[in-house]
Picture (cartoon, rainbow, N blue to C red):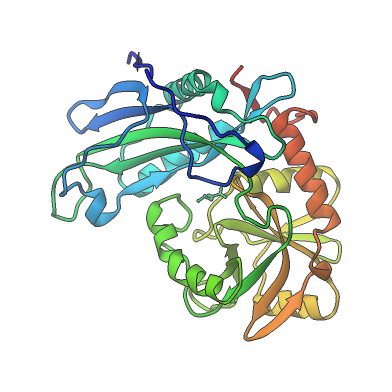
Length: 355
Ligand code: COI
């Protein structure tokens, strides 16, 4: 397939003050678009100016939510070059999501080349300030105008990008978490382990209620017993209990996070005891009460490591590490961010250079 490029003739104004960047509301000049039809396969790959998409009101995504996405970042190195962090993992996961949602897979190699080209064209949009990056959002959705419930026969795949700062307004300050013991994010056999928009839609009601009560996010429990910890907000979750780093195993309702995997790798290499095991909310609370719970944090591409300073369960609040970021959380954050921005060695070969 030949990639077509149409350059923007009137580039948008870039953010003046990078220290004020938030998350997800500024978009770069160009986007990548590629179409799919059952009889033709993928066709017409094109980098073009960022613009609206025209959709038929009967487009299947609008009715039955066949939509998947990924999230990754481009990091500005000190020498001016640009790094990607484990981008192949994103495309592998994207294709896993596609299979689960009865959508066509993409050619990972080809899309990687197109994404790099897109980043190069918009390279001046990759911010330079500490803690900032260019967020990259590949996504695909069903476009066929049809109202019967079955997989669509046509799709659009796009990549949009935009400069971002911290995901949470708290930045690296520990967040307050509400343990959700009524509603669930995902159930065994469902779609919790793939990145489909519906999972996020299903999470909104609880997280809005939690926000109204003054919490940043919710801690999700398993769907069957409402007992075992699954995720926190849109992130995987880790606990430091005495000298053990614990995270929930990938049971099928948990997203296999790339930051989660990186944390496990690095901590094991540091000689830390890392355990992927089911952890009940009772164990978390008991450990918080008897002083064994040293740290807790969420992991994700958007926030990297987000320390948890307080957990509220059944009306009672428990402080973790006196509401401060823990030593291990900070060390892991520094290591991952150091590798991403290229000021720490990358012994794992996780960095892919764009330029
Ligand atoms: C991430 O933290 O990587 C996420 O997936 C959050 C995103 C939905 C904004």
